[in-house]
Amino acid sequence: MSPKFPARHFTNPELHAIYETHKLGCYPTFIQDGGEIDDYPFVMQLSFDEAAGLEIADAGSYYFFYNAAENDWLVTSDSY
Image 1: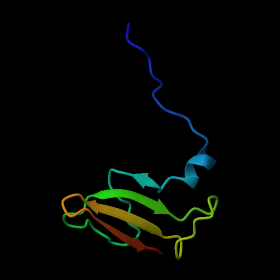
Image 2: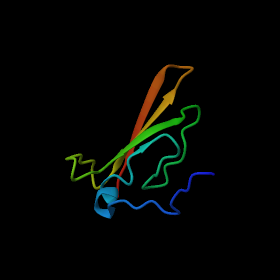
Image 3: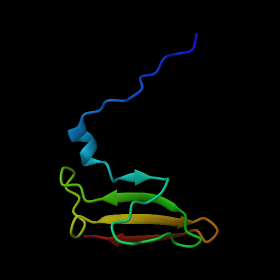
Image 4: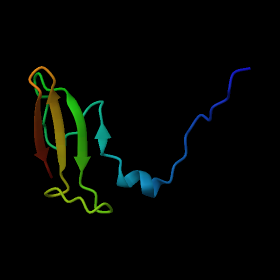
């Protein structure tokens, strides 16, 4: 018998809204038209988070990219 999983996962919407734009891996969520950085894969995104006391410009975000061949980081940001 296979395990049954709920069709939907329920979370506290207030807690989810706090962290919905922080990301680790996958794809960044740019505020402006940012685009990908050639040869620098996306690593993580930190976004404005009033509850955590993280203020980035006008509700902005930091984007971290890493080039393993060059052992080099690139950090960009944007805001509203």
